[in-house]
Amino acid sequence: MFLDEVKMKLIAGKGGDGCTSFRREKYIPMGGPDGGSGGKGGDIVFSADKGLQTLIDLKFHKIMKADKGENGKGKNRRGSNATDVVVKVPLGTTIYDEDTGLVIADLVQDGEEIIVAHGGRGGRGNVSFATHENPAPSFSELGEPGEVRYIKCELKLLADVGLVGMPSVGKSTLLSSVTSANPKIASYHFTTLSPNLGVVTLKDERSFILADLPGMIEGASKGVGLGLQFLRHASRTRILVHVVDMAGSEGRDPIEDYEIIRKEIVSYSDALQQKKEIIVANKSDMEGFQENLKRFQEKYPDKIIFPISALLKNGLEELMKYLADTLETIEAQQIYQEEDFESTIVYRFQNEKPYTITKEDGIWVLKGALIEKLFSMTRFSEEEAVERFGRKLKGMGIEEELERLGAKRGDEVQILDYIFEFKD
Figure 1 (cartoon, helix red, strand yellow):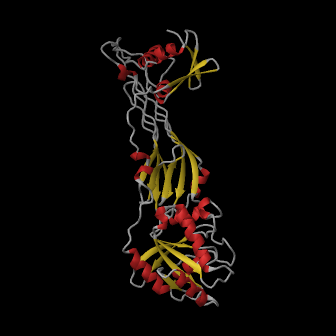
Figure 2 (figure 1 turned 90 degrees about the vertical axis):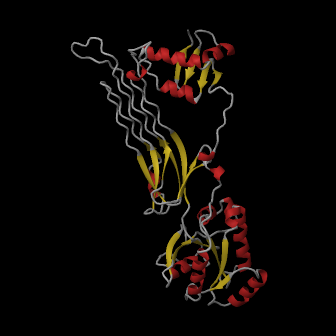
Figure 3 (figure 1 turned 120 degrees about the vertical axis):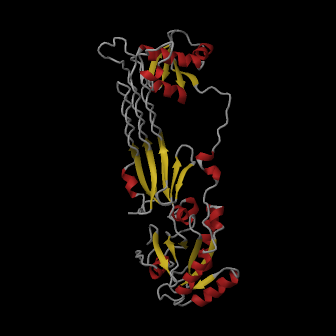
């Protein structure tokens, strides 16, 4: 089964917890802290694999979760890092962040990898907090939560040449006639519900990949029929071969069919409409072909047109040689602009507080990535850890801001799902 779009939730591994421990040995009654730090949580890594052709495997893994890092131990023993989760996807897979719409990665090379969700760092053991002022700290950190991301994976097939055109114009027949591909062929609309790929090999041993893309109808660029699926895969090809039923065998006008497809291509993207286009006038063995071809050539005198019969294999050798020659002069186009990728976004410093404070139903609600991370990594069962947490909040100006907003001692303050009492 072919599948070219999947939405997923990724949960990277939490870091291992740090250890609170003291050296305990005979004849050493005052051993110092020796709690080790936790290991790093597992990353979720996407890797391109040329052996895959579909995203169907991801359909059954809508939630992907990595393991937690190992906790630290006494005697300064650090916890082991968790094993990363590697997700194999086909070449041509684009990964988007669902929240921002930005491209996280565009995987087009075999073996290319990208960390999409980072595992949390391990919490520090109490030995890491030892200072001259406090040589024997009795607290440690919990592991950092792993990154949680909502993503969308889209597969855009990597083909050199894409066959485009209205349904039932002969694209599948053409593909099967020049490659070893065996697409389903029948005389009804939308026979091709998913792209088919084949390798064309010429007598001079040159070769290229040819894709038969799902047929289009008017309104395709707005999602009607199979249009968006077609356009997505067409965006990676270097040449568009527009197949036209020049005989008008199904009662449609070849010129009107061609103009409908061109309109949808133009509406979809500038990059797609600027691709090299070749028109293949198919069904030269049928009645009405010559009359329609003459009309078409008069309407579009500057177009490159190859008359063929895909069924009888007439004119195919010349067409394939022309495509191979043309491909040697065309480089693969970049289908995204640099600003589409989240790695190119520059974050400039702004003099804003890294948190927000609101009052909801009588409770002061604190929100902010830094506060929530600090909270998640604090072991509240340890008194020194609680005191450190309070000092951190005070240093961020939260206590002062709460008082400015009118908070009184004894009011309730909420961080994530936990509620505390505001006090000294």
